[in-house]
Image (cartoon, rainbow, N blue to C red; front, side, top):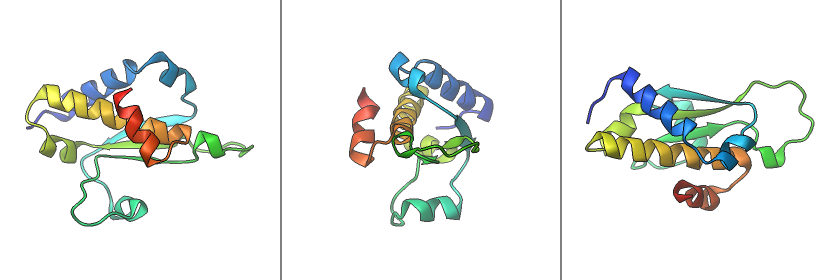
Length: 123
């Protein structure tokens, strides 16, 4: 499936805006990015094998582990557009996949481990 970068960004923005209010209220110092593919460094960070397709990545200081860090750059959630498009057959699937990924990565921002983040995808 292929959609334009602009349309993909609109879908991602809509997914963020339509998150449950309890998610939105707790987000703190977080920026969202869309890239076509992850960098080598990002793939190394998650320590996964070659058969794994990275769809999204949270990078930063989990809220549950924060102390007084002082001024810091925002945490990042990067959504990998081409990897998502390669897994989806239509626009509905793209919207659903983006929403799940965003919820998953925000759960990491809140301090969830991988198991908790997977639960957040459906919540």
